[in-house]
Length: 190
Image: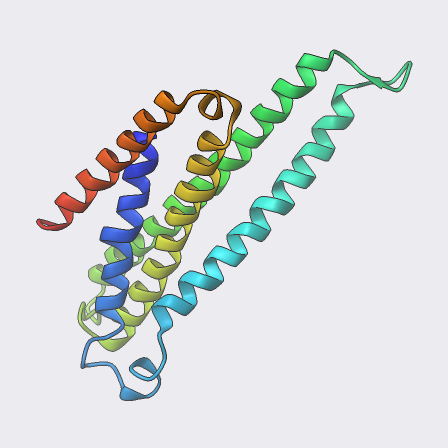
């Protein structure tokens, strides 16, 4: 839960505000950059695409591995508990892949910036650079927020372990708040 709070805080307090800042600078043309909320729009689209990728990947991956768990001689699944554990492991693999996608999208910003910085024509504050980095930051923020809320926190808080213990739920909420609060505090100096 603490790590989920850190991821959530990173998305909301570091990456998303950077996107808002970059896409609202006065050096960008009034139309369209100051007439439409591109950061929110790109974050929304990225969230929808992430849901679609998450859903499709889980579906395809589970179909592939469900076939591996079926005994070909009798056409029945082998071991009831193994299927449940396999489904959880499958879900964790998909979550890890989608989280890595969010990290990659954020790292692309750094990579593009480094490549452009090495060229003679790069201007860090040029409208083109600000737009590209701002849009990629919006997308990255959406992925981080989605992963923290949907795949990590919702899975933990709606799981049997936490649902069976109010004390554990309170401790988990405190851990999330501590992680998100720590990242929020760091935003002051970042």
